[in-house]
Length: 446
Image (tube, rainbow, N blue to C red; front, side, top):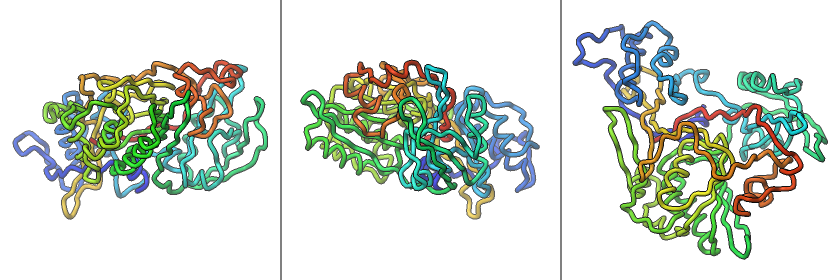
């Protein structure tokens, strides 16, 4: 599970020693090491940091198993807080992406045909090494045909295994051809590279960046990509964040600092709003970037800024967290043209809460929602997702083309100002999404 934590870039830890509030004479006392004592630590931690602390039950049942106790504290509005036992890998959130390195979508075409489409294959992942490619059609999982009725249960069954047998083929002329069997084993996926391209568009050069996530320390790579764009005379920019779960807010701020004109080190970037203990925290671009000790400083990044008035951002239901911050927090400074589908709606941030005593006495780690996030204009509250100005169904034109291909549905739409309708889209007509395997499992860091 080290890979899971690494890819999702949760890096901030909180040093909590006390399990009880010494000023509260009514606080219960339990034997150290007991389930009840761990639950008391969980409750105490959540009271201090949790965004919805005022909604927590006054008298929870300390006898519950730790994970169940934690769930009993959560607000009904909370979709994202979770906890893990660092000594028990079975407690970590599981997803097909972080176990095998791919994701798929089950869609119903206009003719009512149901197809399962591989939409993402991580570079140097088990799926990649087994030969899976974006755009392939899965016809069977472990020998069973995928249907609208069993898609979700089959995805869950994959997460309970360490090997999956797939029957896949290519989409040709409205049917699946060249079927073959591929076996994918559970394993490690390496950090994903940023994919960059430069397209010619009506005599102008458009830069394209596919960014999978926002790990700490990516400012150097972003700076290099934008230096190349600037040297090439790029005048328009397409950011592809369609599968980006998020990560470091500082890396997202570094990206944002490289795009619009008119920024200074004092330009406000983000507002964090917490509970009565957390209060309100405002940060400029420079301050948020510097929060990552590996980052380049604001002025170094600004030397390669493109100074644009507008940006195209490609999104899907998997665009979340720090990726949504990029969309929302650029809006006070430039025109953001969002193309694709509505984002997930993670308008919040958090950090890891754990016991750092030596020796450590509690092995559980809490990943709570701690802040709601807002842009420089005070705009936020997008828990239902950020809707695109231009709604484009990625699956309207099959087969799916590789990311970075100028003829790919969302990219071609951006290159044509958002009003392009491909021949494939016209041919396939209305496509209904029935199920998607990628449900983002983690919180981003502050």
